[in-house]
View 1 (cartoon, rainbow, N blue to C red):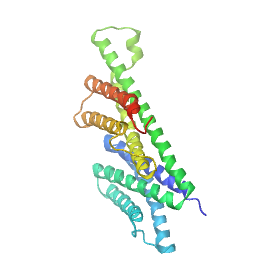
View 2: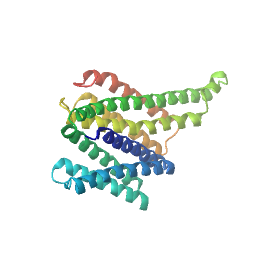
View 3: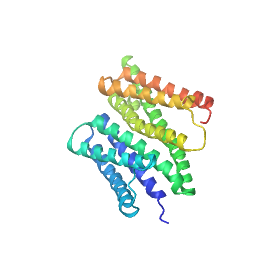
View 4: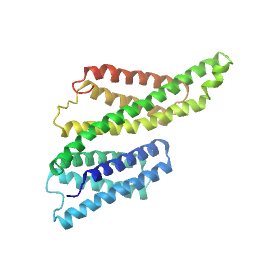
Length: 272
């Protein structure tokens, strides 16, 4: 029997990378990221369409007869709409959130379908989702940490300049503009990773045999971390905050991240 497990994993990988590209374009109006995301999503659409043709013309089964098959067809429609909108119109907000919803729907379909069709491989795929969830969350925390360090360096450099302390430390800390920019870029990279990690975690919680609670301290804390850094991007991109004010906000956001990681994690029912 053909091994579909790696195909499912490839679809999720391509979809996740596409989502990251669309997020970067959404935040920075980056056309290169948009083009890369478009072609990655086109590959996803191609694989989805291939599966759809197999179901319709070989298995003689149009995938709408139950809720899980319906989710697959729904995800295919969302990807199709997203590609058409991305190619014909310039509506970054709609494209990004359509893909975000499509990724979630596709993830639910693959994880539930895999357990019933792929037997042991399906169970392994679902547990691999947990590993990827934790890995992406920790990588995003690494980027948030880098952003925090850049902000602290910015505040220290700013203080030295205000006090007119012209010494070796001043030159080794780096340029204020670059420190501010690097801090921002680190958060732009961290946000989609954390978002995808949370989606994977929630999906795993629903399809696995372990108990999942929306009101778990770590779950709520992770969502709040995402919201806090979302506020950072709103202040930075929409309101135009830069420099010292946004560096202070970023430092406070990182302290909340630490509280979520250590305190909320210790109070969680199923997180470490």
